[in-house]
Image 1 (cartoon, rainbow, N blue to C red):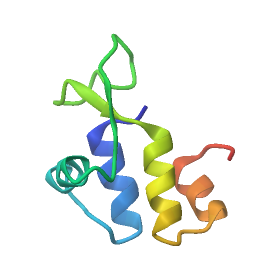
Image 2: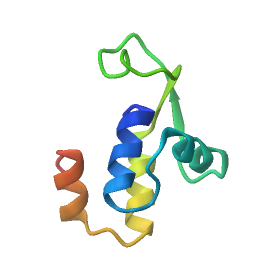
Image 3: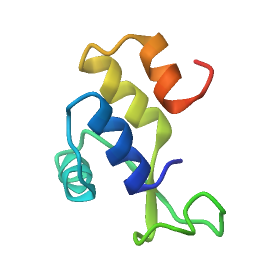
Length: 79
């Protein structure tokens, strides 16, 4: 899970959307999935009560043609 703010930062690096409102729009269109908020340190600083599913974010980036190595670099994860 990532916060809306983190998702906006990641998507901004690929010129997809730059704001949390843009991320909300992608959720409403079904391109990103949300996950319920847990008492997690990851989402404490977020103003939203739920987060973005990391797998849906990765799938969306792949569908947009972003290579896995760039996704790994931006998200700092192992695919």
